[in-house]
Length: 494
Ligand code: PR8
Image 1 (cartoon, helix red, strand yellow):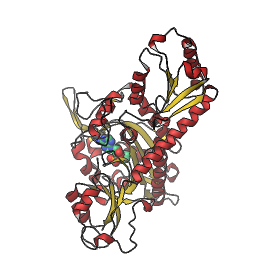
Image 2: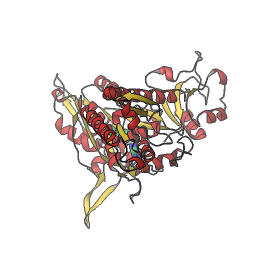
Image 3: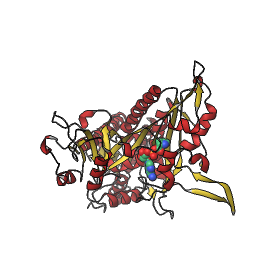
Image 4: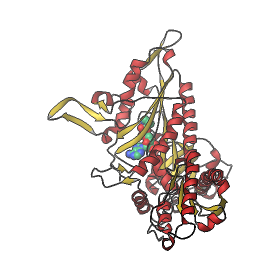
């Protein structure tokens, strides 16, 4: 335990996480509705910086829209697979005051059934295609599994959902690739590493032909799904009769995709980078990138050089502000040590200390939040050095997190297991890591593995096959039935 009273996140992730959310001022978890939480100002600033990145990436090729929260029951129930997947998770509005509604209204669990009837009205000819829209809204899911702030919530406050419609299957598949590329750019900027897999058939989005997912590894060895991309094909188009007139005059169904990200991306930033001192925020999303702490000793308030120190701090603060750095000057009467703990807890990437002795040398001291390295920096070059250091912290955090993920993907060799695999060996390996093993495409083998080990099959790696390949070049054999199969990633999941 650290003197801040915070556990190591690897030892007890749940308590670490709850403690950090509170002490860093991210979320108030005391709201008296299960699965709903209150964003504190600092948490909301972090959330907004993250979503600004997402928004600016989306805006390059999508248009933002805003659809209503309520969905008519008959629309929601139209697509059979979709509703089968969601029926137990829907919150219903049944009354207006004391009057029972003719048609009950659902709080959207996601917006396919709100948006697609309107797509039918918007799409007439091939000239109306493709359509690519997105919205960032709250959605509601009556989650029955254990709820957890940002990770499994009943009101998803920050649901970024994109919906696209295309003239052909090939174009929809092309859109899937673009969405994967876009989400990569997004998580790269958050310095959150991921594996991308194609989900097994039994775990795809209700109504989709297939689903691609991004997962990151949490400190307790479980993975968290942080984004999904679904090929809907013609399924919803058929249900909602979304057709266009092709160039040859024929009437055709559109081909669709949808993809989404929730506040789990904020949870990922917190969980992946934080430590026993608190948050560690990547500079690109840190609400405060630099804190300046004047080193003024209480007994020495009027001592020599104190006014000069204050002035030097103010002029450094002004210069950094001018250079668009998100900076604050902490000139509160607290002791410097107390200030350090406070800003470390908030995850501020860089602290600058400046006292009389530094000023005599025309310098200040940089202390990095990622590795606590201290360097003396001349006041003349402090501004460019801040920029350089922030870039370096951003890079270092990502490299460190990527390395951690890579070293926690364990290949279970086929060769070792000629026939049946030792389940105990797998159980041990999957405790803290993602494992890569061979499964056939029989659903019953996948389910058996999931039930026996209490894990989920994440699926085949979507790109970068190197991540999951076994070394043996021979025929790959299913760990359950030894029939031939292909490599998949498996993990304990959130
Ligand atoms: C879709 N339709 O809905 P998806 N709490 C926090 N995050 C969650 C929760 C929850 N209860 N449930 C899901 N997520 C498609 C795509 C429009 C957009 C997060 O897809 O159901 C997960 O990270 O897969 C999930 O990958 C993402 O929302 C999208 O939800």
